[in-house]
Image 1: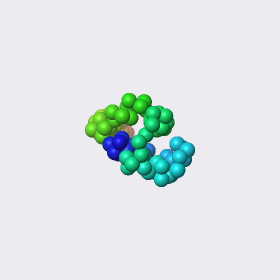
Image 2: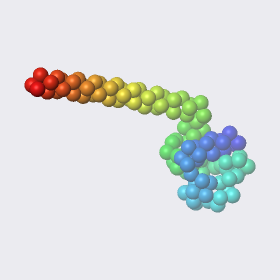
Image 3: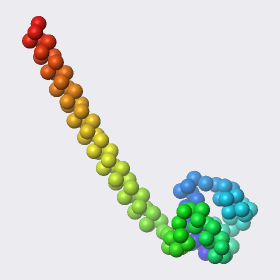
Image 4: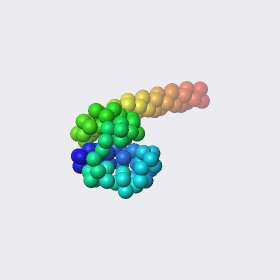
Length: 114
């Protein structure tokens, strides 16, 4: 049960929730929730379903969840965001080049007419 408690604690931290917030959502006391996280208390199926719903996952996902999978998911998301950022940077650079070219063209026309 300690492993499950650690998973629940990790998920709670990822959501940025305090023990008090989660305890209120589960309609239990803070000490009762603390005992779940530390593995002191066994979790019945009903409570397990309640906790998994709170974290928007199935009971199976909650039981099989591990940090490595979560880390891989986060790394993949970061990679996608980085790629989008690099694409945007390229677009900005292309637009900057175009602005400079248009400015130079405008400058040459002014010089030619002067």
